[in-house]
Length: 141
Image (tube, rainbow, N blue to C red):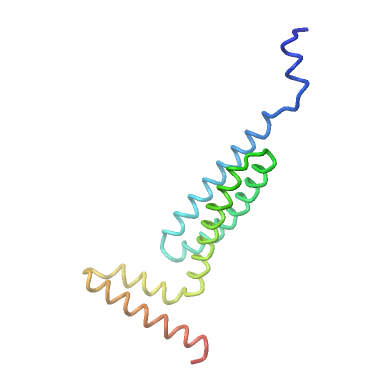
């Protein structure tokens, strides 16, 4: 028996958590990219950014828990301070897009057909009025 190999089996193995954390981080990065691209897409597809944002939030929380368990506190703090607010903003953006679906859809269609900058400014002004009317209609005013 080789004395050098006997030491490697006596301590706890730290090789297993690293590949799991890497896979979790890779999946998180892919889901976050998908959320970002969906958020930039036209409105019916932009609503799916909220779903992928929720998945990313769950993966991020799992990664933070694993980082704390592995005593990688800087990664846990960074994920908590930057990742969670970013995912909450993506989810909030998708929620607001769903809440104001009608006026936002009209704004996107108007901007798509606007040729000049002046027409785009008019689209924005019309959208503000449309949103104000839509909200007052919801509130019964």
